[in-house]
Length: 412
Ligand code: AMP
Ligand code: MG
Image 1: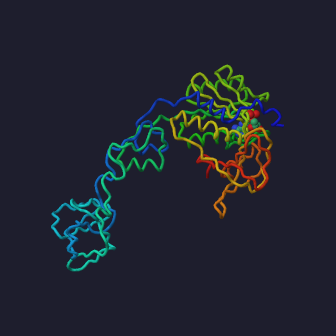
Image 2: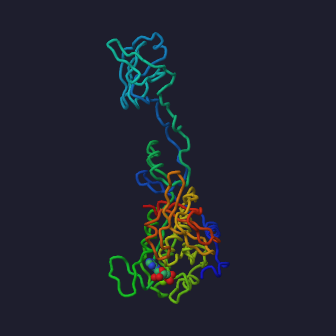
């Protein structure tokens, strides 16, 4: 049983700390067009080149007024019109108002904009029906962002919350970290790529597919070296090629202790790699270290273990290397288990679950069922990890547990 010899296992935290302490972010940066910057990481703070809004403008469709013109409380004739993109530039006679639309620059001297719902129009002019405050409905220049102000720090991933902001500033180019180059291959004589018929004893290669997809989502440049057979020459060639081309090399399979597990031997020869037995489930065997040039992560062969160790260990490693300094996993939350959860003490367990919020707003979570490390459907059925502490045993329905919602790598 797994829990018999758990003292030589290292914890997830220890493994992460060790890995992250060894590596530092890439140094190379590049300047690219904003239109090509989705998913990239800022390499320097972005400074606003302009005031936003660039000029004082109207927040409403209505009338621009001067407060002194309102004192007689008589209707004001309309002396002109101001549209978004077509300002009013004429003379503005005393005791008149200017018709103005949302987004139009306010004419010089404007002290307030009165919305049209508070205006009565007649032959003699416009009468206003509500109290008027100095400055109302005027968006001031620089009210959102001042020219020269820092808009984004370095180390931020550019997505739908950031890129439109930069567009609103007219920033056409942005300085970003260069993409990480990551080489990936699977090992195993039993593996077939999708699209080929299965022969006796063969299975389809799940891991390379999973790893590639996650790498692409993380904005890496993927070098796919395919399936490598369980022999030393093929493995050596794959490792050497990967090491010469990539910043990070990720393999799967061959890191446990079977007779066809040549990876360890190879790596002793080609680099400085530690083989860890992690105190997590699934995903006990995991290798990490350095080849001649590239960092190396050896994922376990079982697909759930491979995806989980990628998610929990490789993802933070890639974020650090890529300079994504505000990266973090979704926070862990407390939820009530609606189903019993089977567990033996000894390893931190990442079961897959489905969480929802009940009528009282409390979180509840159910298991996706069979938790074997070959049951990949548990990811597609689940929306979170149920994270069960290392020393905890089985959980009865009704007990509180921690959940960690999937981030975008696993979410549908
Ligand atoms: P290994 O660590 O190479 O002994 O593999 C452990 C288990 O995972 C075995 O059942 C393998 O057949 C399976 N496995 C290894 N690599 C893959 C892969 N790329 N896709 C699917 N299953 C795999
Ligand atoms: Mg194998």
